Amino acid sequence: MSDKAQKPASNAQRAVRQLREMVFSGELAAGSDHLETELAERLGMSRTPVREAALLLESQGLVEMRPRKGVRILPVSASDMREIYDVLTELESLAAERAAEAGYSEPELAALAGAIADMDRALAAEDLEAWAEADDRFHAELVRLGGNSRVRMIVAMMSDQVRRAKASTLFVRPLPVQSNEDHREVFAAILAGDPARARRVHRDHRRQARDVLTGILERMRLRNL
Amino acid sequence: MSDKAQKPASNAQRAVRQLREMVFSGELAAGSDHLETELAERLGMSRTPVREAALLLESQGLVEMRPRKGVRILPVSASDMREIYDVLTELESLAAERAAEAGYSEPELAALAGAIADMDRALAAEDLEAWAEADDRFHAELVRLGGNSRVRMIVAMMSDQVRRAKASTLFVRPLPVQSNEDHREVFAAILAGDPARARRVHRDHRRQARDVLTGILERMRLRNL
DNA sequence: GCGTTTTTTTATGTATGCATTAAATAACAC
DNA sequence: GTGTTATTTAATGCATACATAAAAAAACGC
Image (cartoon, rainbow over all chains, first blue to last red):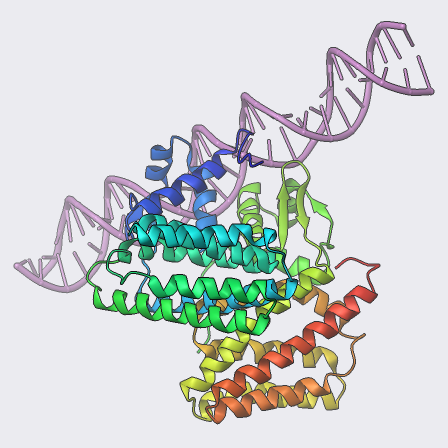
Protein backbone atom coordinates (compact mmCIF):
# COMPACT_ATOMS: atom_id res chain seq x y z
CA MET A 1 0.00 0.00 0.00
CA SER A 2 2.71 2.43 0.89
CA ASP A 3 5.95 2.38 -1.03
CA LYS A 4 7.92 5.41 0.01
CA ALA A 5 10.89 5.47 -2.27
CA GLN A 6 11.44 2.81 -4.83
CA LYS A 7 13.31 5.09 -7.19
CA PRO A 8 16.91 6.19 -6.70
CA ALA A 9 15.96 9.53 -5.13
CA SER A 10 18.20 12.43 -5.98
CA ASN A 11 21.12 13.46 -3.83
CA ALA A 12 19.39 16.72 -3.05
CA GLN A 13 16.37 14.86 -1.69
CA ARG A 14 18.60 12.62 0.37
CA ALA A 15 20.37 15.68 1.69
CA VAL A 16 17.06 17.19 2.77
CA ARG A 17 16.04 14.05 4.57
CA GLN A 18 19.37 13.52 6.23
CA LEU A 19 19.82 17.10 7.31
CA ARG A 20 16.34 17.07 8.82
CA GLU A 21 17.18 13.91 10.73
CA MET A 22 20.39 15.45 11.95
CA VAL A 23 18.56 18.52 13.16
CA PHE A 24 15.82 16.56 14.91
CA SER A 25 18.25 14.17 16.54
CA GLY A 26 20.35 17.04 17.76
CA GLU A 27 23.38 15.86 15.82
CA LEU A 28 23.30 19.38 14.44
CA ALA A 29 22.69 21.39 17.58
CA ALA A 30 20.39 24.39 17.61
CA GLY A 31 22.36 27.57 17.18
CA SER A 32 25.38 25.86 15.67
CA ASP A 33 26.91 26.87 12.34
CA HIS A 34 28.02 24.50 9.62
CA LEU A 35 29.88 25.27 6.45
CA GLU A 36 28.48 23.96 3.22
CA THR A 37 31.71 22.13 2.58
CA GLU A 38 31.59 20.42 5.95
CA LEU A 39 28.01 19.24 5.44
CA ALA A 40 28.80 18.10 1.91
CA GLU A 41 31.66 16.02 3.20
CA ARG A 42 29.54 14.52 5.97
CA LEU A 43 26.84 13.55 3.49
CA GLY A 44 29.30 12.28 0.94
CA MET A 45 28.26 14.53 -1.90
CA SER A 46 29.27 17.81 -3.46
CA ARG A 47 28.20 21.22 -2.27
CA THR A 48 25.56 21.66 -4.93
CA PRO A 49 22.86 19.31 -3.65
CA VAL A 50 23.66 20.22 -0.05
CA ARG A 51 23.17 23.83 -0.89
CA GLU A 52 19.85 23.15 -2.55
CA ALA A 53 18.74 21.18 0.48
CA ALA A 54 19.81 23.94 2.84
CA LEU A 55 17.91 26.45 0.75
CA LEU A 56 14.78 24.37 1.10
CA LEU A 57 15.19 23.94 4.83
CA GLU A 58 15.72 27.66 5.09
CA SER A 59 12.42 28.32 3.35
CA GLN A 60 10.82 26.01 5.90
CA GLY A 61 12.29 27.96 8.77
CA LEU A 62 14.56 25.23 10.07
CA VAL A 63 17.89 26.83 9.24
CA GLU A 64 19.29 30.11 8.12
CA MET A 65 22.06 30.69 5.61
CA ARG A 66 24.34 33.55 6.35
CA PRO A 67 26.86 34.71 3.77
CA ARG A 68 30.07 33.74 5.49
CA LYS A 69 28.96 31.95 8.61
CA GLY A 70 27.55 28.86 7.04
CA VAL A 71 24.25 27.15 7.71
CA ARG A 72 22.88 28.02 11.11
CA ILE A 73 20.46 25.67 12.84
CA LEU A 74 17.74 27.98 14.07
CA PRO A 75 16.94 27.82 17.76
CA VAL A 76 13.32 27.96 18.84
CA SER A 77 12.57 30.43 21.58
CA ALA A 78 9.52 30.58 23.80
CA SER A 79 8.15 33.41 21.74
CA ASP A 80 8.74 31.46 18.53
CA MET A 81 6.84 28.64 20.10
CA ARG A 82 3.95 30.91 20.91
CA GLU A 83 3.82 32.11 17.32
CA ILE A 84 3.92 28.61 15.97
CA TYR A 85 1.24 27.35 18.30
CA ASP A 86 -1.02 30.22 17.38
CA VAL A 87 -0.73 29.24 13.73
CA LEU A 88 -1.31 25.58 14.55
CA THR A 89 -4.30 26.46 16.68
CA GLU A 90 -6.02 28.36 13.93
CA LEU A 91 -5.33 25.97 11.11
CA GLU A 92 -6.02 22.77 12.98
CA SER A 93 -9.24 24.20 14.34
CA LEU A 94 -10.27 24.94 10.80
CA ALA A 95 -9.38 21.38 9.84
CA ALA A 96 -11.47 20.03 12.72
CA GLU A 97 -14.41 22.16 11.65
CA ARG A 98 -14.13 21.06 8.04
CA ALA A 99 -13.73 17.44 9.03
CA ALA A 100 -16.95 17.66 11.03
CA GLU A 101 -18.70 19.29 8.08
CA ALA A 102 -17.55 16.56 5.74
CA GLY A 103 -19.67 13.98 7.54
CA TYR A 104 -17.14 11.17 7.62
CA SER A 105 -18.37 7.70 8.43
CA GLU A 106 -16.94 5.77 11.35
CA PRO A 107 -14.63 3.60 9.21
CA GLU A 108 -13.24 6.70 7.57
CA LEU A 109 -12.29 7.93 11.02
CA ALA A 110 -10.55 4.69 11.92
CA ALA A 111 -7.07 6.19 11.75
CA LEU A 112 -8.09 8.99 14.06
CA ALA A 113 -9.69 6.57 16.49
CA GLY A 114 -6.59 4.39 16.28
CA ALA A 115 -4.34 7.27 17.24
CA ILE A 116 -6.55 8.06 20.22
CA ALA A 117 -6.54 4.45 21.36
CA ASP A 118 -2.75 4.34 21.08
CA MET A 119 -2.47 7.49 23.13
CA ASP A 120 -4.64 5.97 25.84
CA ARG A 121 -2.53 2.84 25.86
CA ALA A 122 0.70 4.83 25.94
CA LEU A 123 -0.60 6.99 28.74
CA ALA A 124 -1.59 3.97 30.81
CA ALA A 125 1.88 2.52 30.29
CA GLU A 126 3.42 5.95 30.90
CA ASP A 127 5.33 5.57 27.67
CA LEU A 128 5.78 9.19 26.72
CA GLU A 129 7.66 8.55 23.49
CA ALA A 130 4.85 6.37 22.20
CA TRP A 131 2.34 8.95 23.38
CA ALA A 132 4.10 11.72 21.49
CA GLU A 133 4.23 9.60 18.36
CA ALA A 134 0.50 8.86 18.53
CA ASP A 135 -0.23 12.48 19.28
CA ASP A 136 1.61 13.53 16.13
CA ARG A 137 -0.35 10.93 14.23
CA PHE A 138 -3.65 12.26 15.59
CA HIS A 139 -2.91 15.80 14.56
CA ALA A 140 -1.62 14.80 11.13
CA GLU A 141 -4.71 12.69 10.49
CA LEU A 142 -7.03 15.43 11.70
CA VAL A 143 -5.48 17.85 9.26
CA ARG A 144 -5.71 15.30 6.49
CA LEU A 145 -9.42 14.90 7.17
CA GLY A 146 -9.80 18.66 6.97
CA GLY A 147 -9.15 18.30 3.26
CA ASN A 148 -7.09 21.44 2.66
CA SER A 149 -3.70 20.60 1.21
CA ARG A 150 -2.23 23.99 2.03
CA VAL A 151 -3.26 23.66 5.65
CA ARG A 152 -1.64 20.28 5.65
CA MET A 153 1.63 21.66 4.33
CA ILE A 154 1.78 24.59 6.68
CA VAL A 155 0.91 22.49 9.70
CA ALA A 156 3.61 20.00 8.76
CA MET A 157 6.10 22.84 8.48
CA MET A 158 5.17 24.31 11.84
CA SER A 159 5.15 20.90 13.47
CA ASP A 160 8.70 20.38 12.30
CA GLN A 161 9.74 23.55 13.99
CA VAL A 162 8.34 22.50 17.36
CA ARG A 163 9.41 18.90 17.14
CA ARG A 164 12.79 19.51 18.75
CA ALA A 165 11.36 21.58 21.56
CA LYS A 166 8.65 19.06 22.24
CA ALA A 167 11.15 16.27 22.56
CA SER A 168 13.19 18.25 25.08
CA THR A 169 10.22 19.12 27.25
CA LEU A 170 8.37 15.85 27.03
CA PHE A 171 9.62 14.56 30.34
CA VAL A 172 9.16 17.81 32.16
CA ARG A 173 5.51 18.15 31.29
CA PRO A 174 2.67 16.87 33.42
CA LEU A 175 1.14 13.63 32.18
CA PRO A 176 -1.12 14.61 29.31
CA VAL A 177 -4.32 13.19 30.72
CA GLN A 178 -6.42 16.18 29.74
CA SER A 179 -5.03 15.96 26.24
CA ASN A 180 -6.51 12.54 25.69
CA GLU A 181 -9.87 13.76 26.93
CA ASP A 182 -9.73 16.62 24.47
CA HIS A 183 -8.88 14.39 21.56
CA ARG A 184 -11.77 12.13 22.33
CA GLU A 185 -14.11 15.08 22.40
CA VAL A 186 -12.85 16.40 19.08
CA PHE A 187 -13.38 12.97 17.62
CA ALA A 188 -16.92 12.81 19.00
CA ALA A 189 -17.75 16.21 17.53
CA ILE A 190 -16.46 15.19 14.11
CA LEU A 191 -18.37 11.93 14.15
CA ALA A 192 -21.51 13.76 15.30
CA GLY A 193 -21.06 16.28 12.51
CA ASP A 194 -20.87 19.26 14.85
CA PRO A 195 -18.39 21.68 13.22
CA ALA A 196 -18.69 24.46 15.76
CA ARG A 197 -18.02 22.15 18.65
CA ALA A 198 -15.12 20.44 16.89
CA ARG A 199 -13.55 23.81 16.24
CA ARG A 200 -14.07 25.14 19.76
CA VAL A 201 -12.82 22.06 21.54
CA HIS A 202 -9.75 21.71 19.39
CA ARG A 203 -8.98 25.36 19.73
CA ASP A 204 -9.08 25.23 23.49
CA HIS A 205 -6.97 22.10 23.41
CA ARG A 206 -4.23 23.79 21.42
CA ARG A 207 -4.30 26.95 23.49
CA GLN A 208 -3.81 24.83 26.54
CA ALA A 209 -0.87 23.03 24.99
CA ARG A 210 0.66 26.30 23.94
CA ASP A 211 0.53 27.74 27.44
CA VAL A 212 2.00 24.63 29.01
CA LEU A 213 4.85 24.46 26.52
CA THR A 214 5.77 28.12 26.42
CA GLY A 215 5.58 28.20 30.20
CA ILE A 216 8.10 25.41 30.46
CA LEU A 217 10.35 26.94 27.85
CA GLU A 218 10.40 30.24 29.64
CA ARG A 219 11.32 28.54 32.87
CA MET A 220 14.15 26.47 31.43
CA ARG A 221 15.63 29.10 29.25
CA LEU A 222 19.18 28.05 30.00
CA ARG A 223 19.57 25.68 27.12
CA ASN A 224 18.64 26.65 23.59
CA LEU A 225 16.47 24.42 21.49
CA MET B 1 13.22 54.82 7.12
CA SER B 2 12.91 52.10 4.52
CA ASP B 3 15.90 51.28 2.36
CA LYS B 4 15.06 48.17 0.41
CA ALA B 5 18.24 47.18 -1.35
CA GLN B 6 21.29 49.35 -1.32
CA LYS B 7 23.73 46.48 -1.71
CA PRO B 8 24.41 44.71 -5.01
CA ALA B 9 21.90 41.92 -4.33
CA SER B 10 22.87 38.45 -5.47
CA ASN B 11 21.90 37.06 -8.85
CA ALA B 12 19.74 34.47 -7.16
CA GLN B 13 17.76 37.18 -5.38
CA ARG B 14 17.37 39.08 -8.61
CA ALA B 15 16.19 35.91 -10.28
CA VAL B 16 13.56 35.43 -7.59
CA ARG B 17 12.30 38.95 -7.96
CA GLN B 18 12.28 38.91 -11.74
CA LEU B 19 10.66 35.52 -12.05
CA ARG B 20 7.95 36.60 -9.63
CA GLU B 21 7.33 39.70 -11.68
CA MET B 22 7.17 37.65 -14.84
CA VAL B 23 4.65 35.32 -13.29
CA PHE B 24 2.48 38.12 -11.92
CA SER B 25 2.56 40.08 -15.14
CA GLY B 26 1.62 37.00 -17.11
CA GLU B 27 4.83 37.13 -19.12
CA LEU B 28 5.18 33.57 -17.91
CA ALA B 29 1.68 32.23 -18.42
CA ALA B 30 0.02 29.92 -15.95
CA GLY B 31 0.42 26.34 -17.01
CA SER B 32 3.37 27.03 -19.28
CA ASP B 33 6.69 25.21 -19.03
CA HIS B 34 10.12 26.81 -19.19
CA LEU B 35 13.50 25.16 -19.33
CA GLU B 36 16.10 26.28 -16.88
CA THR B 37 18.39 27.17 -19.72
CA GLU B 38 15.76 29.34 -21.35
CA LEU B 39 15.07 31.24 -18.15
CA ALA B 40 18.76 31.62 -17.47
CA GLU B 41 19.25 33.14 -20.87
CA ARG B 42 16.31 35.50 -20.44
CA LEU B 43 17.67 36.69 -17.12
CA GLY B 44 21.20 36.95 -18.36
CA MET B 45 22.78 34.61 -15.85
CA SER B 46 23.79 30.99 -15.57
CA ARG B 47 21.49 28.14 -14.61
CA THR B 48 22.70 27.96 -11.03
CA PRO B 49 21.05 31.07 -9.57
CA VAL B 50 17.96 30.52 -11.73
CA ARG B 51 17.66 27.04 -10.39
CA GLU B 52 17.98 28.26 -6.82
CA ALA B 53 15.30 30.85 -7.45
CA ALA B 54 12.99 28.29 -9.02
CA LEU B 55 13.51 26.02 -6.04
CA LEU B 56 12.44 28.81 -3.74
CA LEU B 57 9.40 29.69 -5.80
CA GLU B 58 8.51 26.04 -5.82
CA SER B 59 8.57 25.93 -2.04
CA GLN B 60 6.22 28.90 -2.09
CA GLY B 61 3.80 27.12 -4.35
CA LEU B 62 4.19 29.39 -7.35
CA VAL B 63 5.88 26.94 -9.69
CA GLU B 64 6.65 23.28 -9.92
CA MET B 65 9.84 21.69 -11.20
CA ARG B 66 9.41 18.51 -13.13
CA PRO B 67 12.43 16.41 -14.11
CA ARG B 68 12.49 16.98 -17.84
CA LYS B 69 9.59 19.30 -18.44
CA GLY B 70 11.17 22.37 -16.98
CA VAL B 71 9.68 24.87 -14.59
CA ARG B 72 5.90 24.89 -14.75
CA ILE B 73 3.97 27.97 -13.71
CA LEU B 74 1.25 26.60 -11.48
CA PRO B 75 -2.30 27.51 -12.41
CA VAL B 76 -4.72 28.40 -9.63
CA SER B 77 -8.05 26.64 -9.79
CA ALA B 78 -11.26 27.60 -8.02
CA SER B 79 -10.66 24.90 -5.45
CA ASP B 80 -7.11 26.13 -4.89
CA MET B 81 -8.56 29.54 -4.34
CA ARG B 82 -10.98 28.20 -1.76
CA GLU B 83 -8.13 26.52 0.10
CA ILE B 84 -6.05 29.64 0.05
CA TYR B 85 -8.85 31.88 1.22
CA ASP B 86 -9.62 29.53 4.07
CA VAL B 87 -6.05 29.85 5.25
CA LEU B 88 -6.10 33.61 4.83
CA THR B 89 -9.38 33.84 6.70
CA GLU B 90 -8.07 32.01 9.72
CA LEU B 91 -4.72 33.68 9.97
CA GLU B 92 -5.84 37.20 9.25
CA SER B 93 -8.67 36.85 11.74
CA LEU B 94 -6.11 35.84 14.30
CA ALA B 95 -4.05 38.87 13.37
CA ALA B 96 -7.08 41.13 13.75
CA GLU B 97 -7.81 39.65 17.16
CA ARG B 98 -4.23 40.08 18.32
CA ALA B 99 -4.06 43.59 16.95
CA ALA B 100 -7.14 44.49 18.97
CA GLU B 101 -5.60 42.90 22.05
CA ALA B 102 -2.41 44.86 21.61
CA GLY B 103 -4.21 48.13 22.30
CA TYR B 104 -2.61 50.21 19.58
CA SER B 105 -2.95 53.96 19.76
CA GLU B 106 -4.51 55.90 16.92
CA PRO B 107 -1.18 57.09 15.47
CA GLU B 108 0.06 53.52 15.44
CA LEU B 109 -2.93 52.65 13.30
CA ALA B 110 -2.26 55.44 10.84
CA ALA B 111 -1.10 53.14 8.07
CA LEU B 112 -4.25 51.07 8.42
CA ALA B 113 -6.43 54.15 8.38
CA GLY B 114 -4.50 55.43 5.39
CA ALA B 115 -5.18 52.28 3.43
CA ILE B 116 -8.89 52.54 4.22
CA ALA B 117 -9.00 56.16 3.14
CA ASP B 118 -7.24 55.27 -0.11
CA MET B 119 -9.74 52.52 -0.75
CA ASP B 120 -12.61 54.93 -0.25
CA ARG B 121 -11.05 57.38 -2.61
CA ALA B 122 -10.35 54.71 -5.20
CA LEU B 123 -13.88 53.40 -4.92
CA ALA B 124 -15.34 56.85 -5.43
CA ALA B 125 -13.18 57.28 -8.51
CA GLU B 126 -13.98 53.72 -9.58
CA ASP B 127 -10.25 53.13 -9.95
CA LEU B 128 -10.13 49.40 -9.35
CA GLU B 129 -6.38 49.06 -9.70
CA ALA B 130 -5.79 51.62 -7.02
CA TRP B 131 -8.44 49.98 -4.90
CA ALA B 132 -6.74 46.58 -5.19
CA GLU B 133 -3.41 48.09 -4.27
CA ALA B 134 -4.82 49.76 -1.17
CA ASP B 135 -6.68 46.59 -0.26
CA ASP B 136 -3.41 44.65 -0.35
CA ARG B 137 -1.86 47.31 1.78
CA PHE B 138 -4.67 47.09 4.33
CA HIS B 139 -4.33 43.35 4.69
CA ALA B 140 -0.54 43.47 4.87
CA GLU B 141 -0.67 46.13 7.55
CA LEU B 142 -3.32 44.28 9.52
CA VAL B 143 -1.13 41.21 9.60
CA ARG B 144 1.85 43.27 10.61
CA LEU B 145 -0.09 44.67 13.53
CA GLY B 146 -1.00 41.14 14.54
CA GLY B 147 2.64 40.74 15.54
CA ASN B 148 3.20 37.15 14.48
CA SER B 149 6.03 36.87 11.98
CA ARG B 150 5.03 33.41 10.84
CA VAL B 151 1.52 34.53 10.14
CA ARG B 152 2.98 37.38 8.16
CA MET B 153 5.08 35.05 6.06
CA ILE B 154 2.34 32.57 5.36
CA VAL B 155 -0.16 35.27 4.50
CA ALA B 156 2.33 36.85 2.11
CA MET B 157 2.85 33.48 0.48
CA MET B 158 -0.84 32.81 0.07
CA SER B 159 -1.48 36.33 -1.17
CA ASP B 160 1.09 35.78 -3.89
CA GLN B 161 -0.77 32.75 -5.05
CA VAL B 162 -4.07 34.60 -5.44
CA ARG B 163 -2.58 37.76 -6.84
CA ARG B 164 -2.83 36.62 -10.46
CA ALA B 165 -6.38 35.39 -10.09
CA LYS B 166 -7.43 38.57 -8.37
CA ALA B 167 -6.06 40.68 -11.18
CA SER B 168 -7.99 38.68 -13.77
CA THR B 169 -11.28 38.90 -11.92
CA LEU B 170 -11.00 42.45 -10.71
CA PHE B 171 -13.14 43.88 -13.47
CA VAL B 172 -15.74 41.15 -13.33
CA ARG B 173 -16.48 41.62 -9.67
CA PRO B 174 -19.15 43.87 -8.28
CA LEU B 175 -17.87 47.15 -6.90
CA PRO B 176 -16.43 46.35 -3.48
CA VAL B 177 -18.59 48.70 -1.48
CA GLN B 178 -19.28 46.21 1.27
CA SER B 179 -15.57 45.52 1.51
CA ASN B 180 -14.83 49.07 2.52
CA GLU B 181 -17.55 48.93 5.15
CA ASP B 182 -15.99 45.78 6.56
CA HIS B 183 -12.54 47.26 6.72
CA ARG B 184 -13.81 50.26 8.59
CA GLU B 185 -15.50 48.02 11.10
CA VAL B 186 -12.39 45.92 11.63
CA PHE B 187 -10.46 49.09 12.19
CA ALA B 188 -13.00 50.35 14.70
CA ALA B 189 -12.88 47.08 16.61
CA ILE B 190 -9.08 47.19 16.80
CA LEU B 191 -9.07 50.78 17.95
CA ALA B 192 -11.76 49.99 20.53
CA GLY B 193 -9.72 47.03 21.75
CA ASP B 194 -12.45 44.50 21.04
CA PRO B 195 -10.64 41.32 19.92
CA ALA B 196 -13.71 39.14 19.54
CA ARG B 197 -15.42 41.63 17.29
CA ALA B 198 -12.30 42.28 15.23
CA ARG B 199 -11.95 38.56 14.64
CA ARG B 200 -15.59 37.97 13.82
CA VAL B 201 -15.92 40.87 11.43
CA HIS B 202 -12.74 40.12 9.59
CA ARG B 203 -13.62 36.48 9.33
CA ASP B 204 -16.99 37.25 7.78
CA HIS B 205 -15.31 39.69 5.45
CA ARG B 206 -12.89 37.10 4.16
CA ARG B 207 -15.54 34.43 3.81
CA GLN B 208 -17.53 36.80 1.71
CA ALA B 209 -14.55 37.56 -0.51
CA ARG B 210 -13.83 33.88 -0.88
CA ASP B 211 -17.35 33.08 -2.05
CA VAL B 212 -17.39 35.93 -4.54
CA LEU B 213 -14.04 35.01 -6.01
CA THR B 214 -14.49 31.26 -6.20
CA GLY B 215 -17.92 31.82 -7.67
CA ILE B 216 -16.50 33.91 -10.46
CA LEU B 217 -13.66 31.49 -11.07
CA GLU B 218 -16.04 28.58 -11.37
CA ARG B 219 -18.13 30.47 -13.87
CA MET B 220 -15.24 31.54 -16.06
CA ARG B 221 -13.38 28.31 -16.02
CA LEU B 222 -12.36 28.54 -19.65
CA ARG B 223 -9.07 30.24 -19.12
CA ASN B 224 -6.55 29.03 -16.60
CA LEU B 225 -4.99 31.39 -14.14
C1' DG C 1 1.88 1.19 -43.08
C1' DC C 2 2.67 0.01 -38.15
C1' DG C 3 4.77 -1.71 -34.07
C1' DT C 4 9.37 -2.36 -32.18
C1' DT C 5 14.05 -1.50 -31.45
C1' DT C 6 18.03 1.43 -31.90
C1' DT C 7 20.14 5.80 -32.17
C1' DT C 8 20.31 10.56 -31.29
C1' DT C 9 19.19 14.45 -28.87
C1' DT C 10 18.71 17.13 -24.85
C1' DA C 11 17.50 18.72 -19.97
C1' DT C 12 18.68 17.84 -15.71
C1' DG C 13 21.46 16.77 -11.49
C1' DT C 14 25.83 17.05 -9.74
C1' DA C 15 30.74 18.04 -9.50
C1' DT C 16 34.23 21.30 -10.01
C1' DG C 17 36.79 25.57 -10.71
C1' DC C 18 37.28 30.24 -9.87
C1' DA C 19 36.52 35.26 -8.78
C1' DT C 20 34.96 37.90 -5.10
C1' DT C 21 34.91 39.51 -0.74
C1' DA C 22 34.38 39.13 4.21
C1' DA C 23 36.90 37.76 8.09
C1' DA C 24 41.06 36.80 10.30
C1' DT C 25 45.71 37.51 10.88
C1' DA C 26 49.87 39.89 10.60
C1' DA C 27 52.53 43.97 10.18
C1' DC C 28 53.26 48.27 11.73
C1' DA C 29 53.27 52.86 13.72
C1' DC C 30 53.30 55.18 17.92
C1' DG D 1 50.34 47.57 24.52
C1' DT D 2 46.87 49.52 21.42
C1' DG D 3 44.81 51.21 17.41
C1' DT D 4 45.34 51.13 12.37
C1' DT D 5 46.43 49.35 7.98
C1' DA D 6 48.03 45.71 4.93
C1' DT D 7 48.07 40.87 3.90
C1' DT D 8 46.48 36.38 3.91
C1' DT D 9 42.94 33.01 4.25
C1' DA D 10 38.87 30.86 3.17
C1' DA D 11 33.67 30.48 2.23
C1' DT D 12 30.45 31.64 -0.83
C1' DG D 13 28.03 32.63 -5.29
C1' DC D 14 28.20 31.64 -9.77
C1' DA D 15 29.74 29.66 -14.18
C1' DT D 16 30.79 25.68 -16.46
C1' DA D 17 31.56 20.80 -17.65
C1' DC D 18 29.81 16.41 -17.86
C1' DA D 19 27.43 11.91 -16.89
C1' DT D 20 22.88 10.18 -16.82
C1' DA D 21 18.49 9.22 -18.21
C1' DA D 22 14.49 10.38 -20.57
C1' DA D 23 12.26 11.67 -24.67
C1' DA D 24 12.34 12.13 -29.56
C1' DA D 25 13.69 10.52 -33.85
C1' DA D 26 15.25 7.23 -36.87
C1' DA D 27 15.92 2.68 -38.46
C1' DC D 28 14.11 -1.59 -39.13
C1' DG D 29 11.37 -5.83 -39.46
C1' DC D 30 7.26 -7.61 -41.19
